[in-house]
Image 1 (cartoon, rainbow, N blue to C red):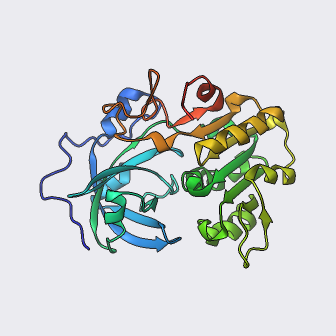
Image 2: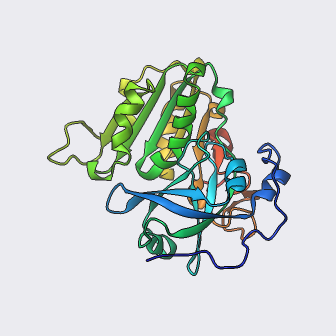
Length: 302
């Protein structure tokens, strides 16, 4: 199936050639614009997940497009709708935007029928981000469960681009089964080239699995934690946050140095539909990235 953006101009406002300042919400509102894109590559990862590589068609727009690790886009499929997707690519790569997408609903099922060369559109980026500069000079622990590895790729790329700014970096990754593991082809690169210690585990072992079996918190046995000098980033099912962050809290890492993404609550990305609200907080505008202390004070956030 081949999709194409409708003939009308999706950029309804005058072109702004200024890179938005992500520290100001008023500037973020300027990102509510459409970028016409072409799918340049599709990488099958599992039966239900694919990595889509997109290239913004207009060279001027492509040159100014910027995002921060942890932010998300609204992906538009003409005739089907749009969905919020975390950005999985490097912030330093202006040539393409990578989105890891799970086939889960009407829009994503339609996208899975698209071929290379199909035209789609993106809006954004939206939301808060991981404070990567704040972590300079510190050790970093990244914990991913299942599809949670997708939003963690951006901070992993960031760390690689600024590797001398960080101490020891550990990536703990767990899935239900080994067949559900994503980006396995990058594990060796992350470990050998980026000097990131890889720790993987599955809940249920298959005959071809030779690694650890159990819950993801068991991987902390392989990590020596310096609580006064460590930051943590956690992405995955919300139920995982409590077990992982509570363990890190017991190890002495302050909750304001643990960061989680509530990207599963995203909907419109602009705080207009109110579907992501937790109390008086719009998780799509004030989040999706929060420190765990803030999450603990948001009733029913997880």
